[in-house]
Length: 109
Image (cartoon, rainbow, N blue to C red; front, side, top):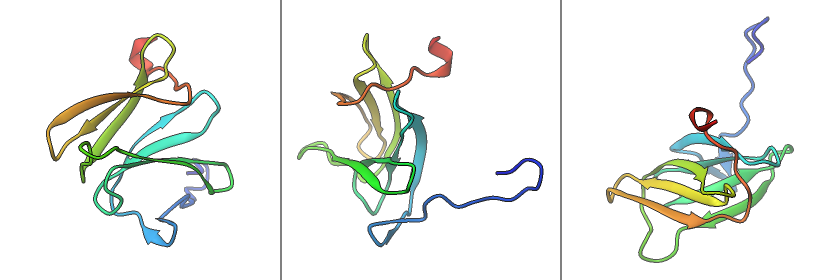
């Protein structure tokens, strides 16, 4: 949003021709890419988008961890290569190794 004019630009409303029905949370990695979870339609997908709007990475949860409502994602661990993800429908908090270094949460600095 342009604070001076109030203009707002939509970055994404669909991916691969499918409407985003539940984008949630927003976190950055150290390369400046942003990640978010998508609830509902994509069944547990975390996506990383490049500056031009192209999908750079798509990670699906392995069998047994699929959840239609992943709602939060953050990075942690000593090297910020551990992703912590809330799976809200099944009531689980999971962690997994992540290929990209994330940024620490603001309150952990």
